[in-house]
Amino acid sequence: MAKRISNESSISDVLKEFIEVNKLQSGMDKIDVQQAWKSLMGNGVNSYTNDVILKGSTLYVSLSSAVLRQELSYGKQKIISMINEELRKDVVKDLIFR
View: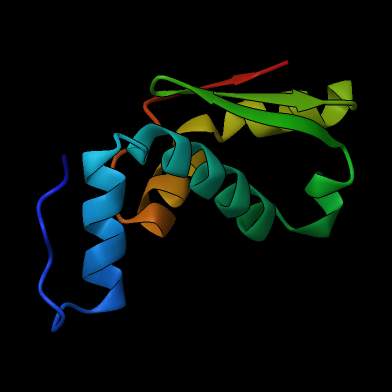
């Protein structure tokens, strides 16, 4: 049973408590990473992106262009740091292009 929250709590505090109590943080991280990918990569890369999946701390990105896959693989660490900076926490440790 969840603990009772006082009426003076802000909505953000209530939502954080709800996410914590119901162990929903990993699902929220998956959604946040997908949104961060879309906002950081822009329309050019997103048009070739088929799927963005976070499993554990590894981000799997499925691309339809082999040339783009090769180009992005050169900047893996920069992409990882950009995503983690956008999310303000270390969620992604490794990045695999498919």
